[in-house]
Amino acid sequence: MTETSSKTRILFVHNNFPAQFRNIAQELASRSEFELAAIGCETARNLPGVKLARYRTPAGEPSAHAFARRFEHECRRAEQVMYAATDLVDAGFFPDLIFVHVGWGENLPLKSLFPQAKTVVYCEFFYRTSGQDYGFDPEFPASGVDGRIELDARNAATLLGLAQCDRGLSPTHWQFSTYPDEFKSKIAVIHEGVDTEALRPDDNAALTLPTGRRLTRRDKVVTYCARNLEPTRGFHIFMRALPQILRRQPEAQVLVVGGDGVSYGRRPSRDANWKLAMLREVGAQLDPGRVHFLGRLPHDAYLSALQISSVHTYLTYPFVLSWSLLEAMSCGCAIVASDTLPVREVVNSRNGVLTPFFSPDILAENVCSILEAPEAYEARRIAARRTVESHYDAKKVCIPKTMELIRSLVGATGQSARGKQEMLATRESKTNVRWIEGPVNGTAGGRK
Image 1 (cartoon, helix red, strand yellow):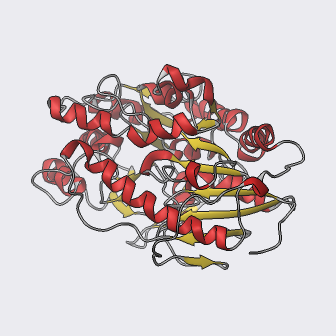
Image 2 (cartoon, rainbow, N blue to C red):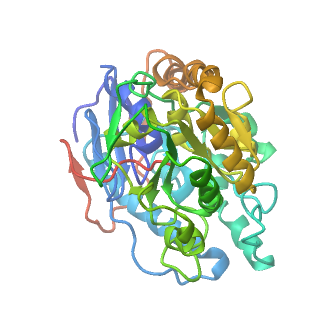
């Protein structure tokens, strides 16, 4: 056991760390009064100044009733988190404050392990059977009673986390609104923030395509970005708008950024992924020399794609708001975004164009209007960036608010209650947990 530290100790728990905790973790790591650790699974990445313990994602299919299978898997993951946390204790690390995402059950053992620690749960989304993503798209009808019960059951770990936590943290007001009224008094609305200094307009930006063609701000470039190409992010609507956009704008180049997996929703029934499904539907009407599927780009190339964009399209069901929308706005993109509830919180007629989600024709009309008269939308580009600077700038807005929340929980002096901590769990077995001190290879924290 190491000697007790006078520093405030903060633990981050997120399977894909740093993910939403990146900005605040980096800020805390730069301050001498804090000592940081994190728990994540195989995809977690190291941050300088944060001691990272990785656990192994539980394998195997859950054997429980269909309604409880997700919770069973979350419990298996929670067990792995418990084992990783015992390594923290063996190293003398008793947290004063814990940040944890409640979406995967990683929160389940923490209150029992560290009863004196204050806990902040990240409240990303609360599932509901009406008024949100479920059943929103008539092309993909909602399931019957069984499906609705299973969806409600997805909230089990979240509800336990909310009942046990000291505070909750939700990134947007609309996402906050999805949570039960009984818990809203616990939840603060603070976005994790955008680095507006790095994500800024650049008239000299350029992107070289796999074909060797080099695109700049002088080209007509339409961009679409998502973690994965799927209906939840309106990929099917965007693809159906492309034939008209290409026909009306013969010089336009289209950049499609995103993977072929499924982050949300279901896979197509006839094809391996949604890109192939939509190419089967509209591919014959597209010029492959003008529509470029770029997959998941390195960050520098992704940034260049936004900086050269003439029109950036963002479509989403009533679901979690993507980082990509705020990043595009920070880069001064001309935004055409779906007129859905999470988007309306950020985009309006002054800083972008709202378009009906289910109308490819109107989407194409809005995109072409900007391509035909870009100067008419210059004021909205400027306003888009100002919106992000005013409300979502990490350094000036979001981190200071999160620091206020931290101080309210651990006190201005950061005095620790760790001396009163009791380790209530017994160490019955160990999994393959590795401590990481330096940079490691891995997948970047999940972009939405």
